[in-house]
Amino acid sequence: MTQATQSQTRGIQLTEAALKHVLQLREKQGKDLCLRVGVRQGGCSGMSYMMDFEDASKIQENDEIYDYEGFKIVCDPKSMLYLYGLVLDYSDAMIGGGFQFTNPNAAQNCGCGKSFGV
Image 1: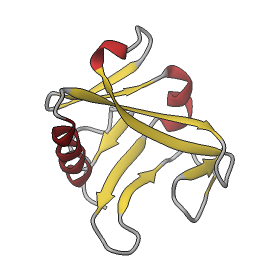
Image 2: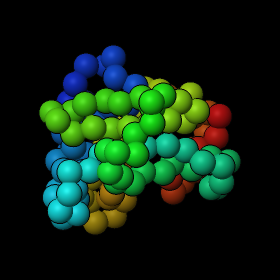
Image 3: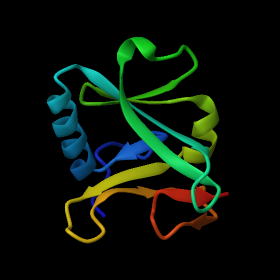
Image 4: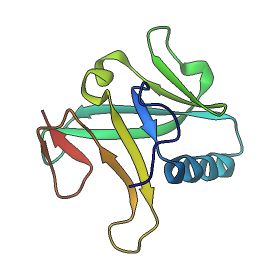
């Protein structure tokens, strides 16, 4: 895994590879969007990660916002209870590539890497 782009004080950290890929994906959208990261019930291990682009106008007053060189990552307070300290990485490997979540709060992780248990 590569080094996170900013200090360890952020609740959600992006590696350089993840930031680069997210910025490329956002550029394809043709809009200045932020990335919402969260959790929901379900998945192999009880909770699954979710992330999607959304317009900055949808940011709620109580959302946590982390700025990466002008790009915002947004997370609701309930999800932040499960995600604080998360490192989001990206790999373009043919097998096992894509976004990878390293979550210090997960007691167990599913083999798919997209869900976890606490």
